Length: 321
Image (cartoon, rainbow, N blue to C red; front, side, top):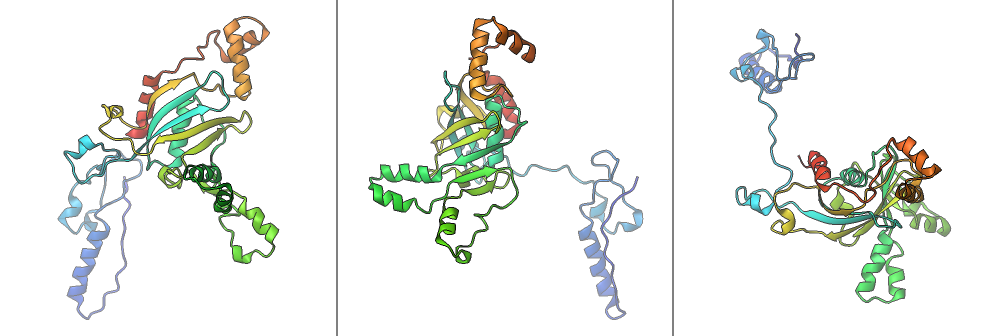
C-alpha cells in the first residue's frame, strides 16, 4: 500500500540554522496532520513512511468524520442546545394544474433547502421519475401586482410599480442568461431596452436556496416537468413560518407530506389529457385503449385515487437525514 503526502521544500541558510529547522518540522507536522485516505484500502486505513513522522500527533489514528450540527432543529430540541437556531419551515400546497379530479399535496420543507431539493421533493410527491427536464417559474410581476392590490393601490400606480419587476426562471442550466449580464448603460435603443425589461431573470437551482426566491412577496410559483408532456404543478406557500410547537411537528422529520389526493402522473402518457383518457379506460376496464394501456403498463388495475403518505415520507427521510 502507498500513502499520499504533502511536503514542502526548504532552503535553509547557515544563519540561524537551528531556529529555521524547528520551524520546518513544525510546518511539516501542520501540513500532514490530516493525511489523505490511501487508494485501494479500507476506509480509515492509512500508511505513513516512518521517516516522515516528526510528531506524536501524526501517529494517532485519524478519527471518523463527525457531523458538526444536525440539519433541522425544533423548539423541543432547543431546550437541550440553546445555541442552535430554530429551523424555518414552509408549508406548501401544490396541485397539478387543470386536473379533474384534483391531484394535490400539502407538505413541509425547510426554507434553507436549495431549489433543486424542492424539485426532488415535488417529483417524489407526484410520481415523477426525474427522467425529463424541469424548471420553476416564479411570476414575480403578477405576485407584486396582487400584493399591491391588497394594499389598496390604484391601477395606474400598480402598473408603474411593476414595470421593472422581472419574472424568475429557475433551471438546471449553468449558463448566465442575457438579462443577468445586461448592462443598461451599454444599451442604446429604447426598443432593445424594453425587450430586456420583459425578460425573466434566471437562476441555477443548484446554487440558490428556497428562501432567497420564494418569499412573502413571491408566494405563488409553478413547477414544469417534461417539456413534451408539459406537466404544470401550481404551487403556493400557505405558511412561511410553521411553528415548531404546532400539531404538525409531532415526532417527524422534514420534508414531510401532511395530506394529499390522487395518484400523481404517469410518465410518458401524453400529459394531462393522456392521464385523463387512461383514467377513463381503467374505470371501464374494457375496450382497445384499456388493453393497450394494460400491455404498456404491465397491469390491469390502477387506483388513480391512491397515494401512500407513509411510504412517501419514508422515502423523503433520505433528504432529512
